[in-house]
Image (tube, rainbow, N blue to C red; front, side, top):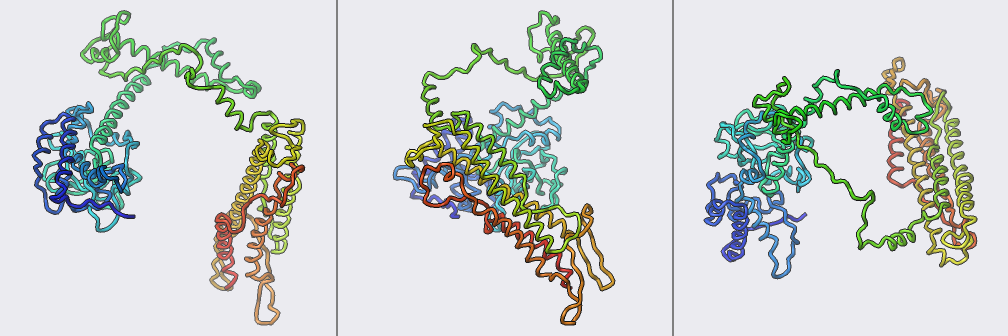
Length: 640
């Protein structure tokens, strides 16, 4: 895959890059930070170590890593631009400069977060924030952010860390590795940031890694793991990251408020709360058991009634809690018009209602009340032509006659019976000789093949003919004699749908039979036989449910007089079972389609066959290889 190359900007294209600098300056001014705009305009580089590059360094002076996609911002621009359009490389450089001059701390503050309250959060807060991280706006996967290719530059970014004074700041860091299962990244602070006394915001000690030793940051310069929400890559849009970080923090706070509110309701006593009346219980049971099968059965509804009483008690306690909060805020619950949040604020200051002291608790925001619709139907726009759409749908759909629906339901019923069959006999109660085993499998295969050829095809054909025999001329005319008219009829599309359904049935039958037979043979071959000597043989049986071996053979004297041999050669066992497998799959070939037999008034130049699973398909080859492998492994002790 070709790599994107962004070389140095030499003295010749300075005019172009001046436009990029002017674009970055306008963007920063739009963010409302004149100081940053002044710094961009002065173009003052930041002093950094020669071996590393901070994301604050002017990127037009950086050539290291300019040809690696994971270090470049994403732009939706073609690689070859037309004359007069901004080249792709120039737009990439503009975005790099724009991202480098933005302050993440300020962008997050503009989203409404209070960093003073954020710095007082316990360490567990940062473990919860990654749970509420919204990954919908993630532009790349971890393999693209941090490629595991030796010799390429490491990705750079800014990491949210807690300083010694408790404040939260974003510091430059190198991204060394990632863990896609936990959506975490291994980072190491750069020399300028590592000199400060910091503590990772995430609980890194509780996240060990098998790839990197010392995952917990024991020293400020040691690598440590952080969640994705606390890392902003240098090639990532800081404005989108600020929204993502702020949204996660707001979601954590809202979840804390909701959990505290639900816990308070669950902790309130329900002994004195009146339960549902008999009329209400009967109404609940009437709606819950409003079906024929439930009415005929004598079911125990005590559990259902207890759940309804518990939900009713919680709802009453919730209303009581909100009323107390409102009364605490105004002194009169009947005349109170303040919100429940104000009531809790007054309760926190020491207000008392009817002898009850409320603890400081913030209620979750009330759900918006949906307006009552004026009509009970959905209004259709005036530009929507319902009659035209209905006519178009009726012209294209097959389900315009009840005969079609009845025929399809009966055909699917017959197909479901075929899917439940099996081409192999997978029931074994006693040991049999190889010839008997082959006869059992051949009989099972021939029985299913005859049913498919004689019963299934004939019953499906009779279902279609009986369904459309009284339809007459039109879309579903069985007596059509013109092939051109038949090509555009709905009957042809219906028979095509039936053909696809029959082909799917054959495929499901073949795949299910192969899966059952391979599983059956693997269970029969699961024993591990260890032949130490002629007098010491151990058998480790893994399938305890099987009582007898599958095949029976005898030890006989070789005709040549050179020793002993088996009555059934070992090579014959493997070849005969594989032949049984191939024969069963081949039996599904050659089934005729129903279309020539139903439309017998038309001329069909050749016989049409149903497509089915063949011996060279991947699923067949994979099943045959699995069967052959387990047979060869089980026959290995017999060759010793």
